[in-house]
Image (cartoon, rainbow, N blue to C red; front, side, top):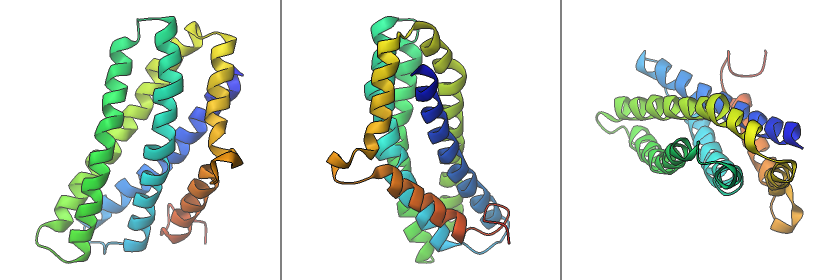
Length: 191
C-alpha cells in the first residue's frame, strides 16, 4: 500500500504542477504583452479551487501529516510549515480571483497585480510540492507502518467514493482536460 499511496500523491502533485506551470507561463506571457486568455485563466482558477484546495490539501493534513505525527516528532516543524502553506494558498487564490476580475474589467494596474500574484502563487506551490516530496515523504517512508499506509491509501482514493455524491477526481480531470484544450501551445494538445 505504501507504493500505491505515494504514487497517488505524486500523481496529484504532477497534475497540480502542470496547472501551475500553465498559470505561470500565461502570466509571464502577459507581462511581455500577450493578451490575457481569460477562458484558460478561469479554468485554471476553477481547478485550483476545486482540487488542490478542496480535496488534495485536506487529505494531506488529515491523513498523511497526522500519521507521521503519530510516529515521530522529527517532522513536527516541517509539517507545521506545510500546514501553514496550505492555509496561505486559499487567500492567495481569492486574491487571484479578485485580480482576474479587475483585469477583465480593465482596471488600472490590474495586469501587473494579477501577474505578480499568479507568479508568486505558482512559485509558492511548486516549492511546497517539492518540500513534501523531497523532505516529508522520505520521513514518511521511514516511519510509517503498513497500517498507516493502508489508511492513507484508502483516504486518498476516498474522493472517488460515490457515497459522497460527487466524484472530485472526475471533476478535477475534466477541468484539467479543459485547461489543456483551451491553452495555446506549448501547454495545449499537439496540433
